[in-house]
Image (cartoon, rainbow over all chains, first blue to last red; front, side, top):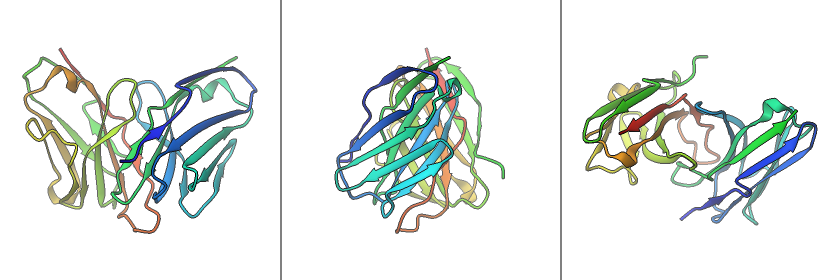
Length: 111
Length: 117
């Protein structure tokens, strides 16, 4: 059974810091990994999707890497801003097609 | 391109009552998912449709939850009767047909926040 872990559960940083969010998963037989952002009371916004054959994806200040063999992914946020404050979730998609999510990491960026 | 639509956005009911949620996926997306997100947890898949057919409903509490997707477009998720532990956000997502090689990005709606008192 696939399990996804995100540690820590919460992080508070001053504005301008470069951040690394970690995600680990137990079964390396995945098709892809997605990073999502969730604002309070809102749905999920997809940030980046990495196919299993890829090692990283970039979008603006965000960079996500995938090491399938070790069951790890990191989301790098450059020059954090207060608007980046949200909960970040990672999820993996395996052969059953469903996404298995971690519990998320609540990020607070202080001005 | 219009996103995934859901209604209602909020619902408060008493335990043992029934409730229904509606989802309209992105046009052309054959696959539709319903997830349940309990406070402080990641979303958990309840049911997955591909067109009209059910692909995975292994985590759907079938004694009280039901879902349908008529004509392969809109979908309805029903709870009857509701329990206190059903309080959660119910998220609908859609994607293109699974390719078997890499999968497709899932797009989520805003969710329906259900409170059972």
